[in-house]
Length: 453
Ligand code: PFF
Figure (cartoon, helix red, strand yellow):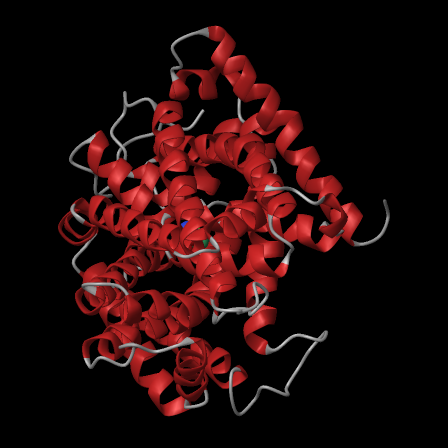
């Protein structure tokens, strides 16, 4: 058996900072931007229910598994897979899992930074008073004009990418920990405020009904795949981000308990975003299936018409940008950690190369909203294609492999020792979920989508 020794890898200063950083990675555009718009596109309540079931039965066990793999090896995802494969005496092909994570991270970062750029641009729009007294039509025009301009989008995309790199260059302790410490509580308070505004609209209950009353006739196999993919995306699972963070986690900390806290906070923020947004959608005769522009076409109406909306609007988009930042740093970290630890590249160079690759690819997503909006593959724009490929395919496949590896390949004695659960039953529940429930669920959803079932 390979001796697992500590590498030159960093470490979190405490369990609390791990929770903050992992929650920072999980809570981001996925919760506030993506969850509402895909819920709107997929018919509401039934979709939300499937998503919640996926978080509970697939997401949480895999989050525990992924954190555990990282912490056991205390190395970057590629080395983690190499080391643990050797420890378990398993096939070398498992190494590719680490690779897929690095690639998925950069692919996601490419379009994530574009949308985060929208959020950052909206800070400026809020500041100059663009939302003041505006109605749904004015806010829609504002958004349409913005996405029609590649130049503006490139500017904000570049700014956001530069901010990500600046933090990542400073390394795990100095950069990442500080950024998340005050953000999460502040974001939470602002979401509550928006829910408060939504309550004052006369469509509050219509919004709640849309979000929580399941109508299963609206559920298709592709919406089930989207819900499952989103459970991975929103919890940052299946690509090594949580594995990297787990590798910085001190030994002795309860992984299962922390996973529940992180998943709980993440789900809460998403639901609050939904509760805030849909009443505004209905109150202003907008359509739930507006697509990626949904929050940018709804929330500014609230800010433009509520007391103190100027300052709340600015604060909201500042928070959203920072929430995106604490996620984007975790998207690039697997690639950077690998370049630094295996290729002897300096941290600066590793950041620049990875960032440049993601930035360049981001241009394709930018153009797919304007000059390349007619360029389609499999009926999808480049942005939609990247999103589908990563969130709906790569993350669930990565998660499936992580579950199989942790549940079947790794020696039970090792996982039991690493997880150190308070009692044998909890460990058994995790084993059943990780060995059978999670991988089979992913497998059957895929079969369904390709039309076999
Ligand atoms: N979880 C992030 C969000 O919901 O915005 C996105 C994300 C971050 C996905 C890190 C995957 C990842 F590894």
